[in-house]
Amino acid sequence: EAFKDVAEAFLVGAMPRKEGMERKDLLAANVRIFKEQGQAMDKVARKDVKVLVVG
Image (tube, rainbow, N blue to C red; front, side, top):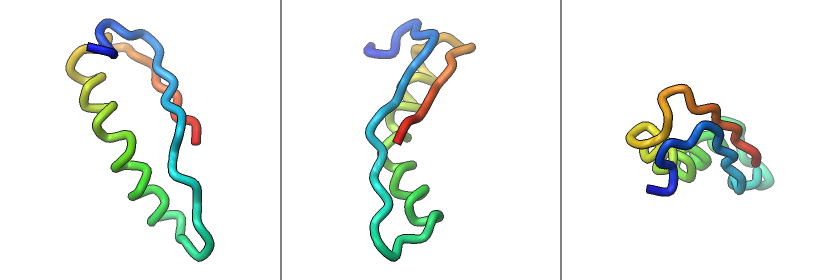
């Protein structure tokens, strides 16, 4: 319901890169963070929603 009819979404709060962490590992960790929000938007947000991920 939080994303119902949303036209723009700003997703803030990605996991920071830790020492020795490769970029692919960081991307995998952040996928887990944002996947649920993306699925929710897919169900109820406008089909032309614009999403900005900041992290």
